[in-house]
Length: 238
Ligand code: ATP
Ligand code: MG
Image (cartoon, rainbow, N blue to C red; front, side, top):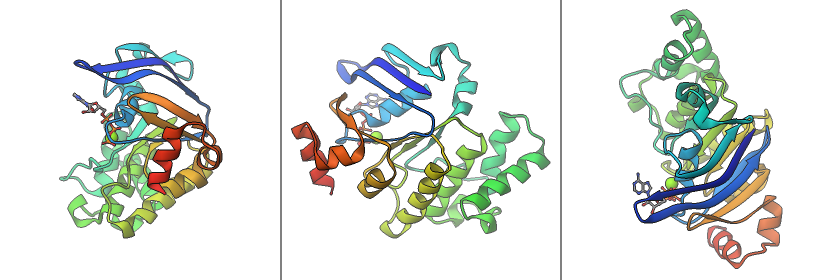
């Protein structure tokens, strides 16, 4: 479904991604870990073209993403952000209907129905009329996930979706992500939640200084890492 092929990205003199290559199949859950500044967010942002790459290619279902219409790409590749990125002046429902109406061209009635379905799916059927400021961080993030899901993406990107949350709210978001994985959603996740990585990820990638240090099944990286950097990094987190 996704093929990242020899991607390079620099900001000025700083090489943030160096010859990064990996592939994901449909229904894979890929977790990327790595130290701060290692290029994790940049990697995700390159996949939906929030950031443009300098070199290499990225293919979505066989098509190079730069050959795709940007709106089409963004619909097919959803993103969930660390700080939720909800529209403050729209209700939970309104956050979801916006894209359905403006991008997918659904009628207001249809968009409302779909939005309420997705809110129910993330356990927020009762909060459709609430504004973000009236919701907890965990609830806001679940709206963010529902909003992304409503566009029926082929791939969902998560950039530290629980990092802004109080510890007691992390579980409800991870539960939703866990359910999505079980339902077969293809997910590319940056997260420091190692229990999630261990139990849900099909593949774990360690990124350091813009390079993939090691990549493989999570059991293998936890139990039997090939690289000292992997051992050091995963050891620090667990
Ligand atoms: P964190 O764990 O702190 O979120 P990260 O692994 O997501 O880190 P990135 O945000 O991808 O790291 O940043 C990688 C490097 O690129 C950092 O050194 C950062 O300062 C730099 N960088 C990121 N975005 C920009 C930008 N828009 N302009 C200039 N430099 C940037
Ligand atoms: Mg980041």
